[in-house]
Length: 129
Ligand code: HEM
Image (cartoon, rainbow, N blue to C red):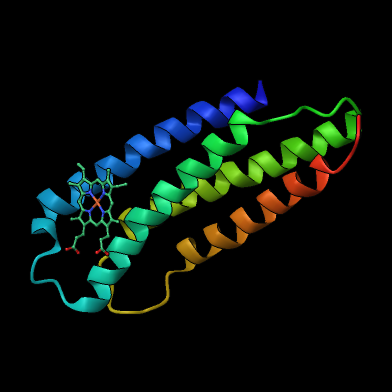
């Protein structure tokens, strides 16, 4: 169940990634003529979203549910952290750009959270059934 959620959420995020391309194309004239910092940040945001989607697809494709109840709960915790991270990276793309500042607190937080969520899943995966 959790694996399937990750898999289909990942596909949905990849679709959102394609839509962010459309958004840059239609709303910002394909970023043509945009000053370089914002242009680079838009590109990075577009590609972060792709990679978040791929992380979910990869996790979902090989997901192994642990039998131990406590470790299952820890898996859920890792997944919830990844769901929040994914929401933040997408929300940040639309709300933090374009910007006058180099700082993007929501996007930064999303990357800390994806590191935490994947680390939790990685550590739990070491547990034998
Ligand atoms: C409807 C689909 C898409 C649209 C309209 C779109 C649009 C854009 C735009 C406007 C940029 C910024 C370009 C610039 O700064 O000059 C960009 C960058 C980029 N897109 Fe998309 N995108 C789409 C889908 C995709 C797909 C499917 C991929 C491939 C996996 C992709 C990969 C990239 C990459 C690698 C960059 C960075 C290019 C660079 O830094 O040189 N995009 N895209």
